[in-house]
Image (cartoon, rainbow, N blue to C red):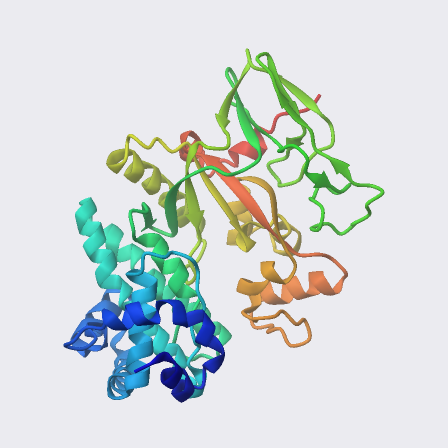
Length: 419
């Protein structure tokens, strides 16, 4: 079928210009014997591997049959699969939501395509010689995406179209795996900050990158409750052969105005831009029990040192709503998230406003009047916002050499004094 006819039948004609450039290539590659990922034997095996129970099979089977029996749906399903996993162009693209054509089964359409990622993941991991448990844990991401969809769509089964772009990250020579509670991705560090360790005491201090606008409360411009340009100041950072000079970041996630000087005879740089790190992602659907978080990080350190010793990552790094230092203000000290934050070295993260609230309230556009209040976290965040405060994400790092100190709140208990 030509694209115009397909989009007309699916009532998605506004995507003609977006999809057209790659449509003919995708259709030329359409499998003559039919689309394998719509075969119940294949998608049932994948859903089991991803951690779904058999209770989803009837809906998966019904939706797959609708796609197989409708040429327009089949062509679009193949296009999305080909564009996501086989096309050499890696730019993010917009796909139809399929709500006009499939109604409440639209999310299941996308879940079937998400499950089609799993055979590719398993084949890729076999080429890497990885243990099966790592592949199995990594495959759980499809179920994690479905948990978010469930929360945002009145309990329905499905995936959002944005999941495709993320699933590509696990393929194509990216070393990106789930190990226990968290996912880890070998990448160069792109933080503007520089981290030093005292040669004798082992204390760690991060210096803020140069030219960052900071408000009196220590949060960066745009993420502060006191956004007064007259009171903002700008960070400075200078490194010579003798010393590093700049504004320290507290392990609690705020930038301090006092400038410090770190003699390089006493301090050694342990994390800077370009160093290999383990970028960390916190998947949905698992609790943040203290022991489970620490065990995942220890396992990840050992895994990468065993399988990729030549890469030599030096730190875990992550930015997330779950790392916002504001959580310590609104949650009790016994909360799992608060306990986890206290083990890490926090730093300001430049994501705030509605973008920082997406995974707390599962709204496409945050609206405090209609935001759900189902969890204690949602209620606490709404109370904080309604008091006139600003919400934002946070960032963290933990040096791999410090992972065995997890559970001691090492960075806070050994915070370097400016005096």
